[in-house]
Amino acid sequence: MTFEECKKGLGSSKAFFVKSRFAVCNGASFLQTWVRNNQPVGESMFNVRVVGTIAKNSRTINFQYYFTDFTTAGTTGAAGMPITTKGNIPQSWPSGVRYTRGGNLPGTKTFTELKTLRTFAQTVNAKPGQGSSGTTDLVFAVYEPAISYTPPAGWTLSGATGGKLFMLAPRWDAAKYLANSTGGGNPAKKGAATFSYVPTLTYSAKAGAEERAAAQHIKTAFTKPEDTKPYMSAKKVPGQTAKTPLHRTVNKTRKDDNRKAAVKQCKRYWGANYTQGATRECDEYPFATTYEGAAEHDYDADAKKFNFSVKPIAKADNGAGGNLLLSFYAKNRLVDGMDDGFIVKIVS
Image 1 (spheres, rainbow, N blue to C red):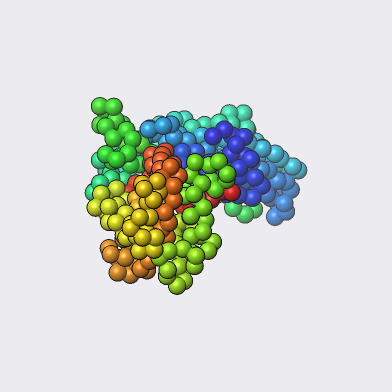
Image 2 (cartoon, helix red, strand yellow):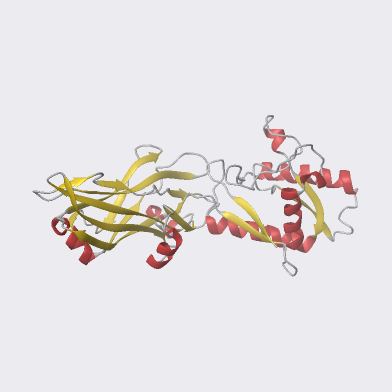
């Protein structure tokens, strides 16, 4: 993500902008009111924007700091005002994770020096082997740029003397089912980093789209659940909003059980020959590769029974939809379990 993309994405009011799981940014304006003899005599201002980017299959996150829009009005002591910049990691999960940092954050520089230098970077890396146990070595953290300043001798500032930018959410992972599972032979580079925001899987219901029938099926499940099978009053399938996302499962038994439960309903409503000579397949939503699949109730008694939809669709459409889903998992490094999630959007 470039500075201009970040600036445009933030606009005049947003605190953060997400381009992808590998490119995000945040920003803030800092205004100083200068006081002498208990009277305001001038103002100064500057903006800070921080762009976080991650190269493909890399564990190193680069945070690029941009200091811009320096202005003064009236009488101020801004020129010599020391400004301190920090990139804090106030929380980690698990706690006690150790990070390797690099780059050239400015530390403390004056208003005038930052106006001239403008751009700095900090890199952050968490080595593999520090994360949670199970199928995925997973580390979550909070990254929080912080700016503080003090008036030069003889000057007083009214109001805040700094602030923190919106917290960004980096994550480091390593797993056999994700790309770069070996680190190219270097264990210290195994896995990769992402930002843990909820990504969106987009299916197209437009004429000519390879996955059109699958997209139309999901659209019906979203907008007219009463028209879907199996019947369930007050059906509301997940995956429509970030509050109710879908979660990937890599467990073969769970996936097989989801597919069996879906096929059972296809046979129930369309008969044993629902495939029409192997030209159609039983399409299910939520997907069989998610914890919210058709067998969810069998694993979680609190889950609503039949809160899913099945429909026989053309084999080619079902395959195209499946390929898009698998590509989406890989591209966004979706991890197994409830610590990660995604939503689905249908365009038409």
